[in-house]
Amino acid sequence: MIDNDSHLFFHCVLPMQVWLSATPSLDTATLPQEVDGIQDILHLLINDNTPDTILCKTVYILWYIWKARNDYHFNRKEWSPSQVHKAVEGYMAHLELNPPQTSVRFA
Image 1: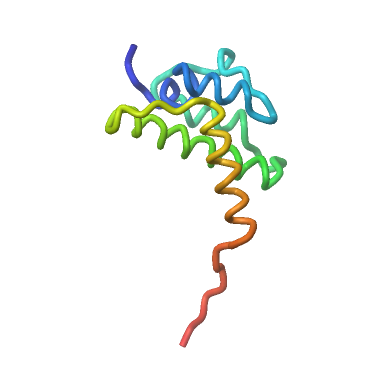
Image 2: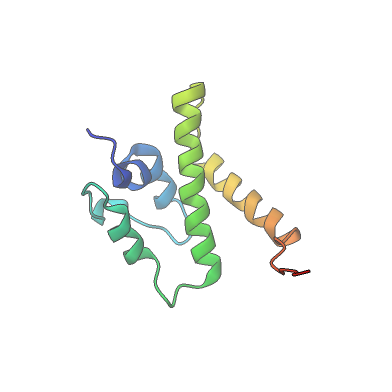
């Protein structure tokens, strides 16, 4: 199997388990599997009506799937779906307590 982006983030074993156990749950078997299919998949998951919390959670899940993949490839450490979810929840809780500074000051 070629390791393309849709496989990496949605069709590999860990991502499939992560998305299936997410809230809301997502059955990735129904998603496109083409090379560079992530653009098509993101259009299915996120639109103008997607609440900010779901948008953020989706992006953070993608980020932590990427981190889990790199941890496996570079450090031979395996993540479980619950570890991915706990990392996402922890990061979101951290951001809630420590929101990024968005104001810009000009001298």
